[in-house]
Amino acid sequence: MSFAGVSPVALVRRGFRAWWQQRLRRSDTLLLNQSNIYILPTRAGLLFAATLITLLIASINYQLNLGYVLTFLLAGSGAVSMQLTHNTLRGLTLHLKPITPVFAGEPAVLEVVLSSPAAARHGIGLKVESAGGATLTWVDVPAGGQASARVSFVPHARGRHEVPTLSAETRFPLGLFRAWTVWRPAGDVLVYPRPERPSAPLPAARPVPGGATAARQVQGGEIEGIRAYRRGDPMKMVFWKKAAKSMETGGELVSRDTTASAHQELWLDWRTCGPLAPEDRLSRLAAWVLTADRAGVNYGLKIPGVDLPRGHGLTQRRACLEALALWQ
Image (tube, rainbow, N blue to C red; front, side):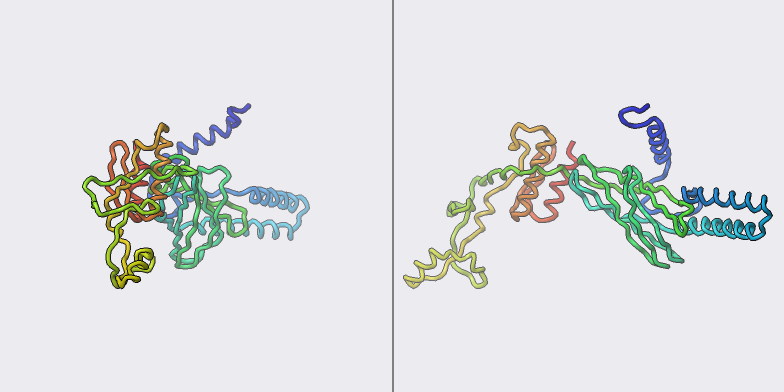
């Protein structure tokens, strides 16, 4: 029997795991010790134990002294292996670095720093616990040093999300035992709305009332004026058609004056997105923010309850995308 393609045993296991993980304290740094490390034999370990029992029974029945030696030698090796597996994790410190915001549907990368105060640690794997079948990221930690491991998960909705539960495990050195720990980091990740693709054209810039009357419209839609050439002006700013006529009459070079462009305001407004659903409007506005940022223009954002003044650069981009991500 199964429910929605999931067996009852898997449902019970998933529910118990979620209940148990909720009881763990959230922390951005975790020190591994005997209270938070768990260890069990692997399938190879169970087969190894069955082999030892078979060897012991055979040695007793046939009075094989060498059989006793082999059995207890292998049993001692297994016991040492269990101790080494547990000690590979014990004493490690796990620390989660700040997470870079991502767009919905893109993988969020979690960088975990593992620190070993003493001996080197080998064969440590990390993964996102909630991602079924997630691939382990393996890393070795040098003695008295640090190593970084990166795992990822894909958030599908915008907003601020808690970092999912992580797990670290090892089967070093013989693979007979699996030692692991479960960690709930205290950090969160900011997820921006998924940008609209393909993006709609940017809305038209608005002229400011009372702007400079000497400004004129040139090809490309940019508002520009003309002024005398100044030393240091880039050659692309020289108005060559006007300069040619001026040089023929003994005049001077002239340059384009882009100061008049400051009288044009670009606003990314919720109301200009057309008859779209709220989430679709946020996606369009996110795409417009990226387009305006690439163009290097000043722009502002207007959504219900939020009115961000015009600006440009990385700070403006982050402020606008964060406002879109957290809008309610």
